[in-house]
Length: 119
Image 1 (tube, rainbow, N blue to C red):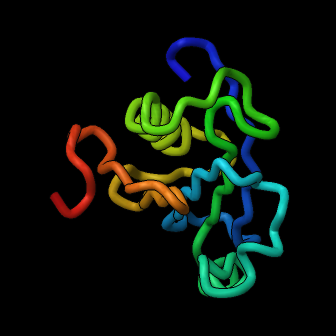
Image 2 (cartoon, rainbow, N blue to C red; image 1 turned 90 degrees about the vertical axis):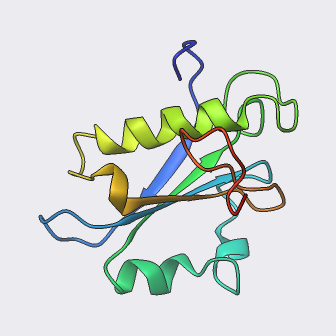
Image 3 (cartoon, rainbow, N blue to C red; image 1 turned 90 degrees about the horizontal axis):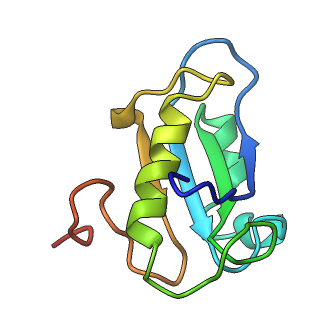
């Protein structure tokens, strides 16, 4: 993050060399509990098999991430910074238009717009 805080993330992606679209899932509930992602929200296994990269990230101050968790306080900026990190990642060659973000249990904030998604 731009303030130097490190957020923990797991990256699941197809084993291919070409760029793939990505789904960023930022969660305050723990990225390592993959059992919560095999059912209806979202099924990472099906997404990866369909050619998507899925990035599970602990929100600031939760589980493996540094900082202090204050709901809604840093979600927008951390979301924007996370998308920038993904777009510049050496692991894959993503473009901003191929990245979508989701925060289970919180309103998703449209990266960079300053407005809640759907607003």
